Length: 271
Image 1: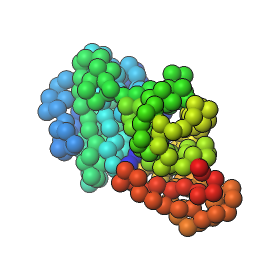
Image 2 (image 1 turned 135 degrees about the vertical axis):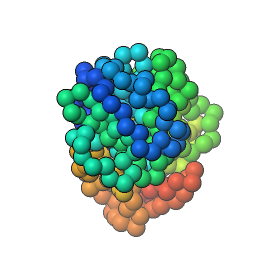
Image 3 (image 1 turned 30 degrees about the vertical axis):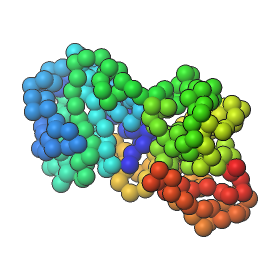
């Protein structure tokens, strides 16, 4: 599933091409996504200027005059810049055609993504209203994690993957951040000290920022706005490395299941 770095990579890739342009046409070839694409989207967006392209957690926010298009990549979605007359491939479900013959095309084989419209402030939308802080912004720190973890017995990996605690820390990046912080992923969240949470918060930001610079992590489906893969997978320290030697101590990386997700850790480096 595309995670925060993949979404941020997409945002950065498309923003410079489409910000400030007006919609000339909307083509919906398949509207049956996770939630139906609004049937009147073309009429709603016609002639509107795109003011900004933002990200909130794993959601792309396209701020138009008078409203916001909320998009999620689901498990296999991607947005690409292309020519409007480029023949669509299978699973190219939606085109936003801008003035000067520029097209933003949505591709999603599994159709678990979404494209929704809201005219209320986006932060009030039910999909966004309860989200936690952004891990790369100043209001996210170890004190925040320590405060919310108090009295909780849930595994720390599941805790930091909770979007109500902090957004965008998906499975890959939770594994990597906990390794760098030296924290066993199964340790109860309420049993971790403030000092260790301060370290963990910094490691979460570090891992996410590094992945954004590498263009995201390509595991199966993800490509960026130009169709190129991300490269962060090449430097993963524990994720998907079960049985391979730890890059720090040489002990074999182990894999367990936590919250129904594959969880990788070093039994020597993480306590």
